[in-house]
Image (cartoon, rainbow, N blue to C red; front, side):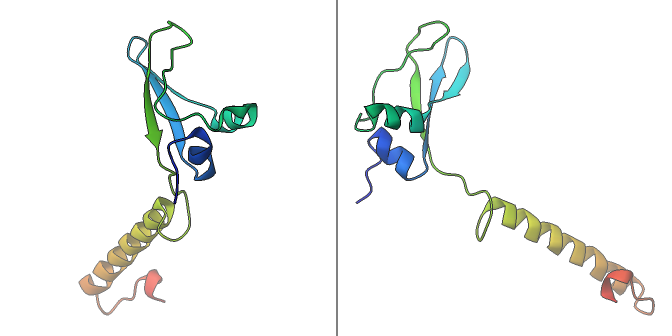
Length: 106
C-alpha cells in the first residue's frame, strides 16, 4: 500500500509539497529531500506551515508527479499533435493539386 500521508512517502513516489501564503500571494515548494534527510520523513500531513517572509499561517498543497516525456507524457502528446498537423497540411496540399506532389509526400 502506498502511503502519501508522510513527507517520506511523498518524496518516495515523486510528489511535491507546496505552501501558499495568502497575505504575500506566493507559492513555495517545500524541499522534501532535505526534510527527509534531516529526519522529518515520518512527519504526517497535515501540519502547520508559516510564511518565511510575513509569518502568516500558510496552506499546504500536495502535487502529483508530472510526466515530462516518454509514453503518455505531455511532451510525447505535443510531438504527436505537431506530426498530425504537418501530415494534415501535406494531405490538404495534395488534395488541392493531385497532379503536383508536395515535398512531404516524396
